[in-house]
Image 1 (cartoon, rainbow, N blue to C red):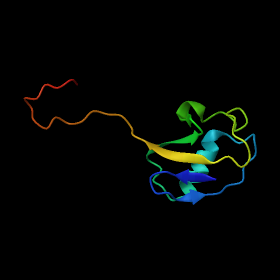
Image 2 (image 1 turned 45 degrees about the vertical axis):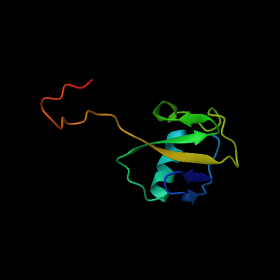
Image 3 (image 1 turned 120 degrees about the vertical axis):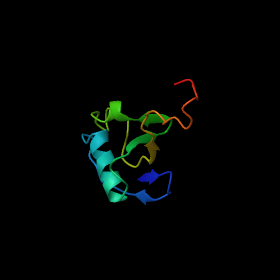
Image 4 (image 1 turned 135 degrees about the vertical axis):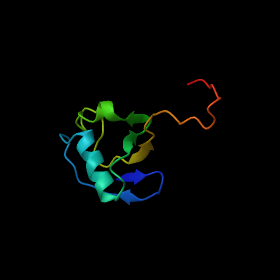
Length: 91
């Protein structure tokens, strides 16, 4: 079961140990109807499975049948526009 921590919506999916973290993430995001233009990560226990983990199989990531995963939205970095042209912040 995967739970979106922002909305508390849950989706239960059937996967094999050879599925990748990325394929599970795509299925969950689609199943919950979330915007696909955002970055997401899965959390298993205290371990965040972000973009570096997407190619890993569930077995390699240590995820077993019946484990509960949390889905979190990850902000995509960027630069904020200057509100005041004279502001010289730490950018």
